[in-house]
Length: 455
Image (cartoon, rainbow, N blue to C red; front, side, top):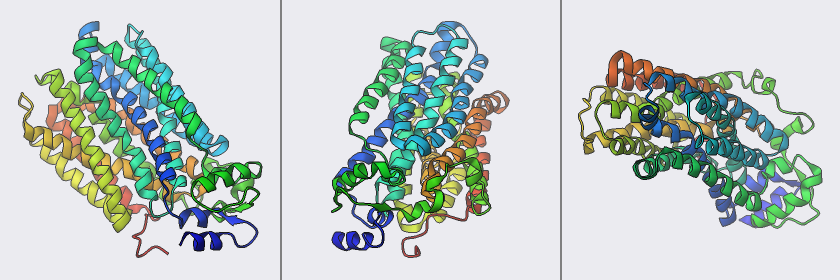
């Protein structure tokens, strides 16, 4: 079968890279590369959620109420708005791999610097700069994962990468629950800075550039041929390549105008709305679950355990969602997940919060987090599918950057909900936001088709 694919891909004026990759096998080496991008996003998710875990400790140490931390929580997502868009554009212009490694360094250094701050002003500044890297990492990881693998495995590979955001959040919550009592909050940020730097150095040595990026640059075709051989394809060192997926975009640079072109405008607007409200819902949880529960009388370890369950449920939900997409396509899968998330959030709004943390309540956090995170993470696979190769980083980055506005507002929405109606209003924000997500996803035209319906 592999020989037939290579024979069909080698006709015409060069090797058809799209045919070679899309219809080829998923080699162990390709699986390893997806694991490498996933590891980068584990650390992205960990650093993103460290602050939410330590706010109760900072309030006690600095003798401050909750209000000053609302704006501090918004600083990271504010940086991610710029970082998400700029990281996508940078990936299209200098390479997904280069942009991903630069993003990791950009969020690791400010996170490490937080260990030395002594006030909310400098904490906010560090979070703003960390947000630039946190936002830039995700669109490039999604693009890399999608461009390393065959077409059939693409939704699973992208989701497996992005699902590491809640996996990293789980790691942050578990570390906080154990390290805060023993070592204090500063030790968490030391670990949060050193680990991504070490992993970035390792990925620099082993992670190759995206094949679809290399094919657009004739001077790097030798590098591309070597990479294809590592993927298991019989490609000669002097091979020439063509990429029909890139069309005439080789000679021009991706821009915002491309993603809002008439044939893409509806999907771009719908994706932007989906990311906006889904990120708002998720980050209301990430930012305020621990503070909400400690304020209701729960112990720090119980509050962190609830956040860990929220994230861990997201890991399971996203993996299951990506597998279902491969069988049923993205439209039915994402609309069903969004509807179930609304029902689950309304059920939580009707549940009283009474310490200590009971198994039933912990399960509800895991289930609701699973549904919310599943929608968020699988939307990256949908966005990577919607946009063609030459503008994929810009398209995904634009949708995520708009979504980060919802991420910024989440810190204020969560605080306002808690002040206005306590836990009931807090959980109701999830239901309202996911209703909008449901409608927006229904408006997307270029959903991932069921395999038996794909052309």
